[in-house]
Length: 95
Image (tube, rainbow, N blue to C red):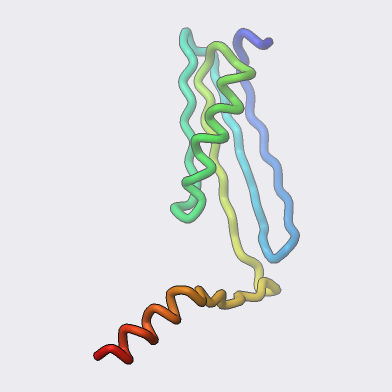
């Protein structure tokens, strides 16, 4: 397990209608401090990223920046909630 580190890294990947980039920046620090920044739609990933880093490192300040862009080739498909639609239909008929 690493005790401390100083560095910078960047990675990019694309596919399935998305282009994803991630940057990590770290500096030596007495304690472990992790800062994760993601687009609002992907904030659910912040805690997972934080936990992954906590398992590997004991100290240092680590900043993670995640960026996700939908590419033009991405098709947006509407999904129908059948139960909700039936509920609306029943409510309208009851009126």
